[in-house]
Length: 166
Image (cartoon, rainbow, N blue to C red):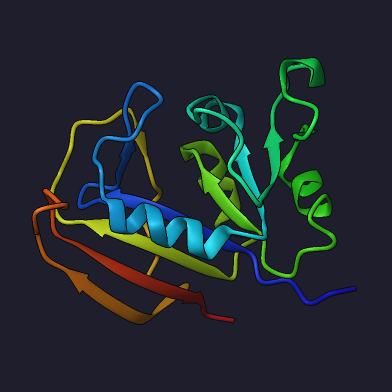
């Protein structure tokens, strides 16, 4: 069996807001490029609402959706499972699957994950979906990279990488 590193990837505001009305609250082109670079070639695990928020399948990724809906609701390429444990089993060939949301899935995933790739957006937003608080006793911040506001980014943000303290 391959040694797995399960990674949560998320962009969250200062108040941990991650979404509203099943959509993103902000546009950060560099963060989207980073998401694509990190997740390309890997399994991405998500809830149905997150899947529904996509315009279509993300290229070069294996989509695993945790849902109670019938398999017929989803395109044939999507692997549909009923719980988080089955989602992890479906990633058997991937040594670094990514958890991409939403809020309920992130809550469950924290106890299974090894790494968090957080993009902290430096503003508070009104939202209906939130990322859980990161417990500093359980997670160690190992890297930070700051990005200021520019012509393509309305908000400053920081990439933060956390490793679970074993």
